[in-house]
Amino acid sequence: MFGVGERVRAQVSLPAGHTRLPRYVRGRAGAIVAVRGAFPLPDDIVAGRHRPPRPLYSVRFCAADLWGSASGSHSVHLDLYEDYLTKVST
Image (cartoon, rainbow, N blue to C red):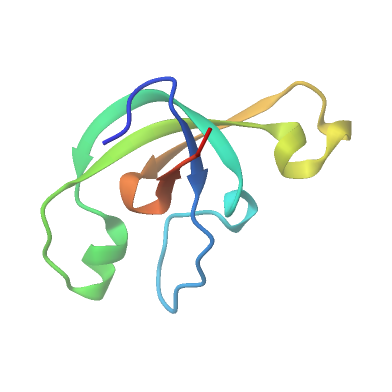
C-alpha cells in the first residue's frame, strides 16, 4: 500500500489483453496525490478472474517527464491501480 506523497513508477508491461495503464506513463515516475479506495481491477474483470478489490491511487506525473521540456510546468493526474505501480527507490 502506498501513501500520499510517495514516489512511484508505472510498470513497464506489454500485456496481451486489456489494461488500464496508458502506454505514455509506462516506466515513468510520479507521486501519489490521493488514495481512492479499493475496487475490482478492470483487467481481472475482462479476463474473468475474481480477486479481491485492488487499491486505486491518483498519481501526478509531470508533463515534461512524459513529453519533454516543451510541455512546460503542466502535470497529468491518472487514477492507477496498485498492480501497475512500484515504489521509486531513493
